[in-house]
Length: 585
Image (tube, rainbow, N blue to C red):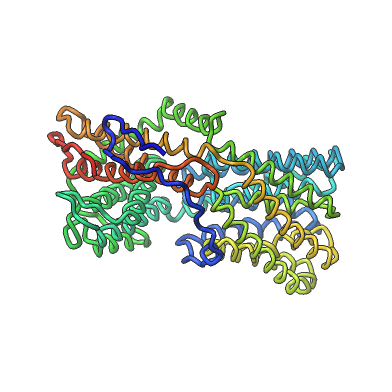
């Protein structure tokens, strides 16, 4: 294969072969390995328990626990948006509730109009594909589209009449409104909680980067790739969170200064040197994450300019043109050239295939096969393979847990409600450690939900669920391998071009004495965002099995040059800053 042509302004890469993509990450041990729990696992876990408990207990008191499946659709909305600042969370959760109700409405109307299993499976597969694309495009999650697909697919196979639909949707919207209140309630006691956690993560990642700076190259520090990428992504996420948080407050001002300090860790000469001291960064992170006052760091070079740039950027984003630009970006992610299209086709084909296979084998309500197939589809084929292993193992173990707990749940209605709440909490407590571990709790919860409408033969429930799981995972992954994602490599090319443009703009504004400080800092943040997107695009494409070779060396060179530009411009902020030209590696 010929060498990659080098355009002017790009890092020079000579006589470096294109490396064919490897099939990576297929080790079962790697896919099933446990990770440390998320630092906020308890927030969605507690939220979904509270949001579910109140509607369940009200329906229990009224003797209508059979309607709990509809209120639960709204209650599950409390799982979303816990990483967003509260102003953004309020809008995002409102959209989640309306989206949940819309998917449920389509399912209920379809179920009331036809009893054809073939039609129901087709509608379920189409809904799953639409929900997957919308969740990925809006980047709402976790848990992403799986909850939407679970609710809409289950409703397709539930007996329904047209005159019942308004009341059932009202239950969903009412429970969704309560879930909205539950998810936003912490704002009353800790208004800047999400921003504090985002900044604490940035400080912790910067501390790791500062503790392992890697080899020196001139005056620029070139940290190890993994630490550098993690720090860049964490700092970028912190800025995004602060920009989305609304008007600046004294606490948010202090948080912005701390992010400036985290950025400074990229260019500090080594541990123990001012803001780049890892222990100091970790101490700030601990205090920021806690409930006390936010630490006030000493001024870093260019802090005033950086904060001025943030204010200017916040004003642009909140202006009408900024909102229009955000809508245009969303439409591009949903447009005909979207890289999400192959994943949508995989979801549609895989869910339909899984549903029809289960129906052919005699499963009366094959919705779990649809949900299983839909849950597999991740950013690339390698991750989808890992998820297939995790889902299958977790569901099979979960069926055993269900068999053990079923006698307890049938003691009485209150016992059934308590079991569902327990497994809802356990699912969120465990799923951040590994998806399979969370599925061990999700599976009995999903099966117990069926008991709200009346007792079912245990053998039938367990047998159908095992068959649905195995066939759903097999059919879903088969569809993923047959529907190739040729657009992944194209996304890498676009990300490389965007990174080149962002790097050139950052160098140009850094070297221009007349450039406004706000313009320089916006250029640096744009470059950071482009580097994060470049790494995400590269990781996604590397996990696809059938595609053309990737420009691995060009990716590496562009990433290194981009981080050197960030280092140079950060070191020389100010009205008279003059950034050096960034050459080839």
